[in-house]
Length: 115
Length: 115
Image (tube, rainbow over all chains, first blue to last red; front, side, top):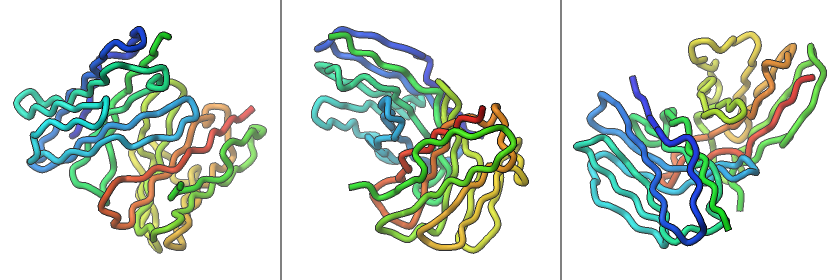
């Protein structure tokens, strides 16, 4: 069975601070995919990143960066120089394959950026 | 622009009535449709998976006679909540898959409130 744990329920930081959202996963599959989604107050999920289990390179996209560590089954997400627009609920998710496969979501982390 | 639409975006109904939610993939053919449910301040949970032209497969604990899924075409899937009750109040999100290599898309969601 697959499981995704986001231990941080809520985080608040002051604008311009860096913040890291933790994600720990469990799976017996040798091949799997990890995702991060942002859910603003409107509710619509915004895709941020997909990473497959064979690619352990860290990735940076603007103020966003992701640290994938297979040894600790973690896929953490860092926002640098946070902005008020980053306030949202962030979900980490896992699937056995990419595409025609359901996603198992973590419980989400509610991030509030204080101006 | 949006590649997945849902209608309605929100609905309020009386207990005992049925509500139909439509999900359309706008620029690709969805061979598989995932329907998720998200209760307030909770994570997304998969309700059912349907393949075009086939009966849906429901997750454990989801009543197939209550949540009717129709996936009769490659661009449209519907979820009907029959005899809705207040405990069915939730945010319903569809996620079509049609072989696009870039991401797993999600619809904008339908917020159902049953009085």
